[in-house]
Image (cartoon, rainbow, N blue to C red; front, side, top):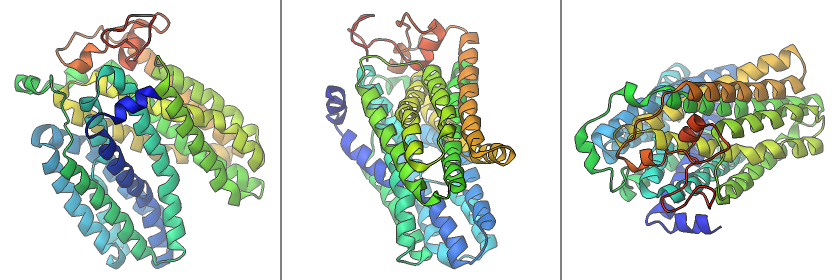
Length: 428
């Protein structure tokens, strides 16, 4: 755990992760809050609620790169002010909005969602050294898993004791407080040796959005699609067994396993390639469909859980290392958009597989989606030309060292040693 202690000892890192956890917990619960409001308060169908959530998700996916580009050009506090105020207005007015207006307002709210996740990743890349970065991103992934475990569950629990409108206010308040907290903290988004490099100008998109970056974004899309599909497959399996009330327990086991996996991976002496972790995640997901009741399903999802946070953290690490400092906001925005698209597409694709076969087909479809994304990422990275050295510290960390993974793969997953550490010795 020495690596984690070193990361948490970085000035500003602990409050950054704490505020980020609060805001991300609320953001992961926003879809559930809107669903409860439409279904309970407006007394409309789940399809109507799904349309509102889809509008919100579409806005988030489209807004991520735009907000990231604004951060690169205008600075963190300007963007946070431009997003916190609309969130405050939206969530305050949710309980009085007619459905049609709520549909459009949800898209606008997604478009201007406070970019907590993107900002946190940029700050981690700026505040840590190459030797600390993998452990820091592992902690960020663990925080993400905790938010997914806590956020929706708290909304459902509160909706049983309070009106859906009040629950919406609470979710909005947490998002606003989180955004304001990050603005007050004002973490650095550029490392000390990257600040001077901003004067060189913003690099053209084709200079950094090449095959390696597309490979990483594809794998980020794939892991999100897999995870979204697994959640649906769990519910479908338990519904067929007449045990749907145990779905929360199985998902909790999946989440706890991911937290453990993230902590273990962050403490390992050497990283693993993103394509390999995603391939393993896909492989262990497919046989989970063989479980037909909740105790066996709990056991079956542990393997997938242990690999979830490590896979997510390597995607974030690779994005930070492949991106010049001047466009890191746009790149992390693209990463968030890829994840949003994966989550949005995973459930429908897996749902079709379940309807056409059996619940086990859902796990197979989710696992195959992960394997396909891993293969695509691997092939894209092998076809990429050698990267030109960059003066930024993040680019310097891309030099290959691992003798196991192919050279081009090693470059985009950042499996190089830190300065002062030789090949074959302790890794990052």
